[in-house]
Length: 327
Image (cartoon, rainbow, N blue to C red; front, side, top):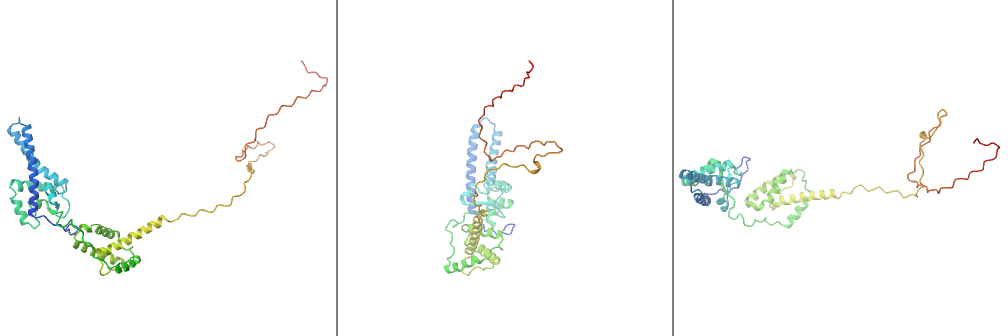
């Protein structure tokens, strides 16, 4: 049970499967250690005995303590041996392990599995009800089974429903008021229906019964007798999705404001020259002639056609008055 009072259906791993997983991990670690020691003994042949012993001790700590801790931390509790047997290390509350959990398990495991040849681990795991060794007890972890026998088999289908029952329920779905159902309840229903293939049938029945009772109490329509609670949840959820789709479709189909009918086309009017306002027309003040009004060209009037230049008039002969101009 977690800190939020949620019961987790986890099957803990017992001594035989854990011992086999640890044996596989130690076999790989000792093989890597042997190859590394062999390569370094040839490459560092000039070193003295004390330096070579220090290097060998460092390699042993690296492969038997550091590597398991790093692998378990990065893989969230799945080493090579545990992954091959479908096991995982988790916290006692069901959460994933972190670096501090893996570090405590690695340090204690080096002592109880390698230094003391695994005797304390075997005794503790055999006596503990959850199969935990000393490293798990000090780190607050437990090894659980991710793959249980029959977990990958076919999903148990829901019991068949009579067609008359579905027809009568369909009429009730249209009249249901779903506005009182909160969004967290819809989310829980979707998650349950999406994970039905991963849950045990008894767990599915228990959880769907609780959610169906909560949903029926809010909408005022009890679960019809003879109908599986999961089928009831799926039908109501489908009706809600249908209503949301219809609402969204109606919003997309709302027409915009109709355009106003345009007036009948009138006969074309001749362009007119704009007339200046009354207060801008030229006028005389105290006998002073006003400035001529500015010429405002008509924008719509066509430009006048060019006029051909005319010949200047001939000068008339000057009459003879008897007066001669001075030379």
